[in-house]
Image (cartoon, rainbow over all chains, first blue to last red; front, side):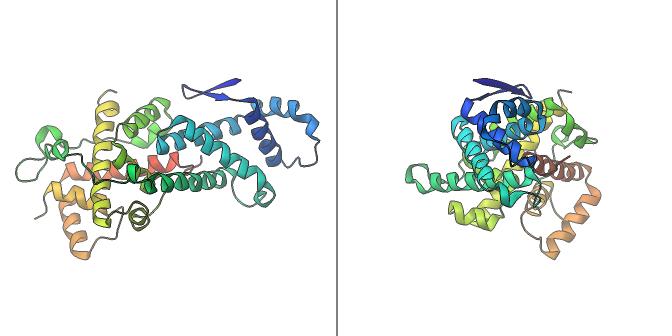
Length: 231
Length: 60
């Protein structure tokens, strides 16, 4: 068992898994004609290839945020990488690895979400969170209360290179209620449009807009509270 | 006259559907006068960019 550390998260790689990644790594480098006996070499090579390790960690984070289940996320990432390997001949020279592998993963996750929503016990219920927290930001006339008026965040994009920011971002995403988070992730992280989300979750488009508005407003509040104000 | 509360709804919806002309105009006027909502609008764009990065977009 090999443990990888990325952005203060620990990921375990089972031996099987290492082989799969190694094969992909080999495929990527266009070294198609090497014999399978060289797996050990490739494993060594793999761990000198920071890109693959980072890519897998990013995929895992993406899947975990979506599915909120570490082992399901592991499975989805593993399947996506295996699918990537199976089709690697078609891949070569066609698209950037990252975009392509992520699109496979995205489809896997959509399948899993579809299956989940089909189960009656876990079906999408109407958003039950009250609007109180968000309503309180405004006075009785609908204008920002002085103390809650959004502040100037300066150049927030600078935080993209800051690991601590991403930790806060994940905490804020995970703090969303499941029903809200599901819609938000499908929209913002998977890039589906609201019409597709409605069909998928059997909710109305206007309900979808309301949920997204609340999700964004809460995420903004969380970031302001946990990141901007704590700096 | 658009309230801040209504403006935040429109700012969110503008990310999901094209706003009607009337909505666009009233939002634009509101933003010209309201620094709080102008900041909010920038923060919405920032959140969207951050999410794109998680999904394998925004490759450095």
